[in-house]
Length: 432
Ligand SMILES: Cc1ncc(COP(=O)(O)O)c(C=O)c1O
Image 1 (cartoon, rainbow, N blue to C red):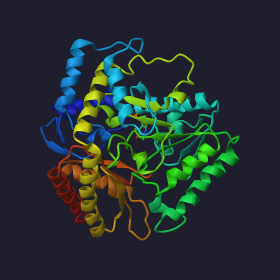
Image 2 (image 1 turned 120 degrees about the horizontal axis):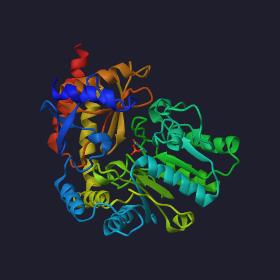
Image 3 (image 1 turned 135 degrees about the horizontal axis):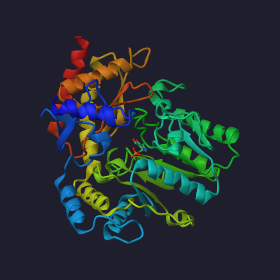
Image 4 (image 1 turned 60 degrees about the vertical axis):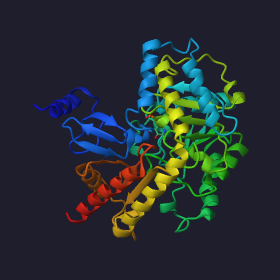
């Protein structure tokens, strides 16, 4: 049995079966460097998905590795019972790039935990217990966060967590009000927030939570003005605005550090994870001091704020600042978008190309007129990209959106190479 087969049969025997790797024959990855990874048989791939937008400054970034190694040799664990410089330093760096007065951070081990903490924070601060969220959103895998999530296939239980209300997705490509959708649809999309508050809550919601660019939903960018109006509505009912920046944070959306900054809205609470520490397990919730101080109960995290993870976060943030990743994401994202739009012109089954910065999606449809989702084509394209040595992701309600989100340090020639491979993968499907 080859090493690859051995790993795959071990996966089937010992790993929880609901954890489904991508591809008909799952990839067994063993090495990574920058934007390239290698499988167990030595085949190299250009990685345009970065472990779900997480290796933000490239696989095995030397500065991040060095800082983690140094910290591991000095002090590997303390718990939050003790003060450590790496945790304070990472929090200070976050405060320096976070919008407005967001300055106090609680570190967790994942995005899920950070979202849980943010919702709890909003409940504690407002003394309320109802939350408004979006359909087609993804917020995590725990009991509460899978209930916040608005994609049925990621919700394992019929039992509902109380107090969670879903409102209409501001989804321009499938806008029911006007085609093409424009800013005039904002009032209609946001009216649903107010309707849901008035009809299905006691009129006192604790918060509205949304991803500034919807990730798992298929890189949906709400129309201009949506967040301003949504924040105005939730605040007029005394609730907080929570921005989920787990995918869209840290320059990913281009030009700004956080996706929500493309609007004029300053969130009350912001949640981060994924790209924050280049793959080390770190999540974070940041808020203003007057909100943070209303949490009076004791709280602790054994691993949250762990010195090795914090060293990774600090080093990653330093690289991001040095390299000005918001600008890089805007430039390289523009280049990638332009290349993908050319494929949209060539193929009737690429209905929409969208996103922000270096988080771009292609919505695949049976044809551009009817816009019927085409998940079989998306699956075939995923496999075809793999044959071309290219890793991409998949998402959308029906699994019909191809998602791209490479390292923020990707170069212009690597983007060119990615587009060439992607083009060959598309043409292969036409010829099949
Ligand atoms: C927007 C968003 N929020 C929260 C999460 C949950 O993060 P984690 O998988 O680290 O628990 C994810 C994960 O994909 C996400 O995309």
